[in-house]
Image (tube, rainbow, N blue to C red; front, top):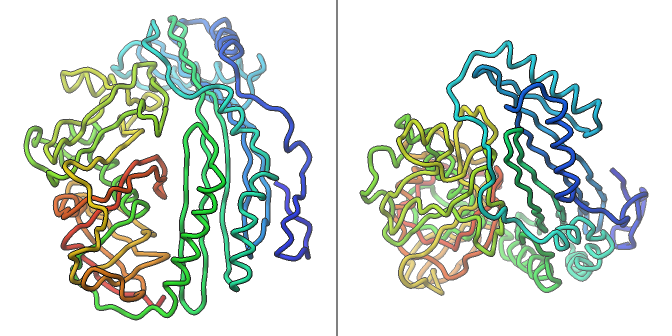
Length: 477
C-alpha cells in the first residue's frame, strides 16, 4: 500500500506514483493456466484431483477529505486443490504455482483426505461442457492496468466542486481483472477472464446531511460521464438531506432506490434461492413450487450470459452454468442446483456449485430482478405519504423462512407527501419480512441497473415501490 505524502493540500490532485503501478500486466493465459494444472496432475498419485486456479490484478484509489488519500495495487495467485481417495475428500491451497508449492499443497490435501470421513459426492468431471463465457482477455487486461492517474482525472472536477461547497467526501474507485480456471485430472479444463470497474462515493454535508452514489460495470471501464454522475448524485443527496427531522416509526410506503433494493434482493436470494435450503425446508420456495409466493409484478432469474454480467459459464464442479428462472410473475419455479443437491432432489445441476464439499450448497451468482408488465417512470406519483430510501446499513438476517431482516436506512432518507419529496428525515431502523415486502410491490421503476450489495454479489434491479414496510425505531442521526 502506498499513501500520498503527509501534509499535502486536500485539493492537490497530483498523482503520487508508487513503484510498479502502470507496468504491463496480464492474467494467466489459457496456455499458462493449462500448464500449471498439468504440473499438479503430474505430481498427483491419482487422477481424482481437482484444481481451482485464480489470478487477479488491479489497483484502487481511495478518497478522503475531498482528495486522493491512498493508492493500492493488487496482484495475487490462488491455487486450490481437492483430492478424492476412496470417497474421502481433502482440500488445500497455495499462494504460489512453483512446483515446490503445488507439490506441498497436493501433499497436504492427500493427508487431509486420509483423515476425513467418506462422503457420497458425484465423481469429478471428466469432460468440458459448452463455452466458458467470461469477457475478452484484452478488455480484462485493460481493466487490470487502468492507471490511477486516469482515475484521478475522472474524479477531479467532482472533488473540486465538493470542496468548493465545503463538503466532506470519501470514496473508493477500483478496477481489476482476473482469470479463473477449473480442471480435473480426469480431463475437464475450463478457463475464462472476468473484470470489473466500480466507483462509490459518500458525501457529508453539515448539519446532518449525507448522500451516497455508485456505479459498477462488468468487463469494461466506467466512462467519464458515469463517474461524474456518481459525484453529482452523491452531492445532491447530501445537500438535500441537511437538517433532517425525526419521524415516528411505523408502517410506510417505501420507494427503494436500486442500491437499497439490491441489498434486500440479495438477502432474499441467499435465504431462498439455493437448493440446500430448499431441500431442507428452510426456503420460502420449499413446498410451494408452482404457487404464488411474491408479487405478480416481479420475475427473478439468474443469467450469467446477460450482457450486464458476461459472467463465467461454468461453476466449481466444471458444469455449464444455466439460465434459471427462479420466480416468474411471482410464481415459484425452483432454486439453483449443484450436482450433490441435484442427485438428492432427483433433478439436474444448473451449474451453480461452489467449491466442494459444500455445506451451504449452491447459490445464485448473476441475479436479475425484472419487472413484469409496464415499468413506472415516476414512482412517487400517487404516494400520499411514504419514504424514499437510498441505502440500507447494518442489515442482518433474523429468520430465513419468511426472510426477516433488520437494519437501518442511511445516506439519504426522505419523506414523500402527495407525490413529491417534502424534506429529509432521520434514519430509521426496520424489521421486515422480505417475502412480505416483495409481495407488496405497488410499482416497479424503469431504472434497472447493476449494483453490488454490501455482503457481496451482483444484482440487476430497478427501484421498487412497496407497501407496509415496518420501521421499528428512529435514530439520532
